[in-house]
Length: 157
Image (cartoon, rainbow, N blue to C red; front, side):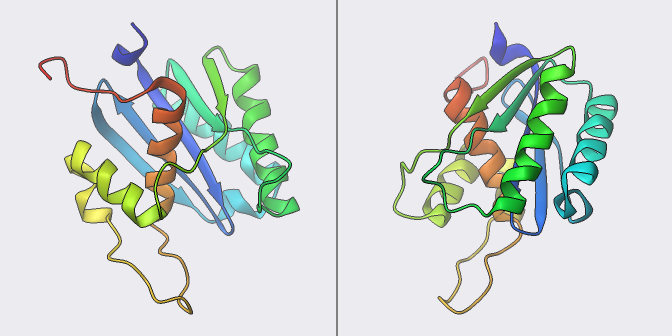
């Protein structure tokens, strides 16, 4: 069953690349890189290293739709990450992120309720003029996993 596998999800936002690793329904690792967001070469190196270090069975990356608001640099970073994952000896899911919540903060709260280890990274919100909290990238990575594979629950749930 795919939910029993080690899953690496990589999400990209302007100025950062974040990743989350699940084993079953448990978050076992997460991280963020500013360097990986600098361009395709850095993104490829980051992804290759993440695959080597984390040894996932499944990788989830974002499929960027034409109507997406992501800029060309972010799109090129996502493409580079996906290309490395496609060449690796793993099952790769490329999924588009839908909007199932009113805000990304609502989505993050819901994900934190299902993945308690993520609660310390839950942003409290922001004013319209403030920058987006960097930790939202972890919740975007979790959202990609659930978009690809559905909700992952512990065996006794």
